[in-house]
Image 1: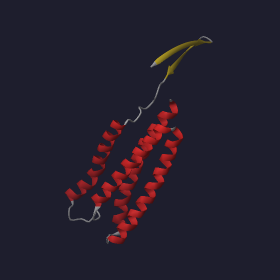
Image 2: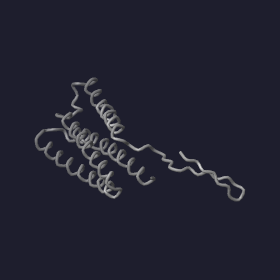
Image 3: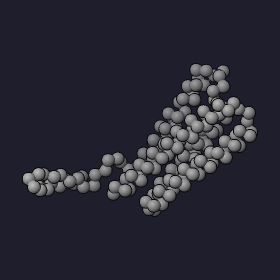
Image 4: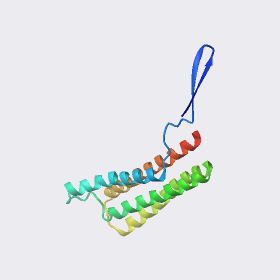
Length: 153
């Protein structure tokens, strides 16, 4: 960090050059966060299965949906990350496009799932939106972290 001191009107002003409030999210850091996020996200359903295996709180093929959402999050982040390397505008467009594609893909998957499996509607909604919202929040957090750092440099 480069510190500069300037004296004006009897006051001393300090300037910080190249100061960032958050660190840039590198691919290595993202993969560590992604792994920890998926472990944390899987902990809830695993605990539900462990403590009440007879209850129908989890929908059939929950883990297939879990893998689909995780894979979709990974693909959308990597696309946004590499688009951010091209330009700031491309990164913002990739963020908005990724959110839109996630919504469309997830709604198609929900339609296919509901048409193929007989599930209780409330149970499906809870399981589906548990995966959808947490993965979306994680993806937006990671992409916005890089966008914010591009705007400060």
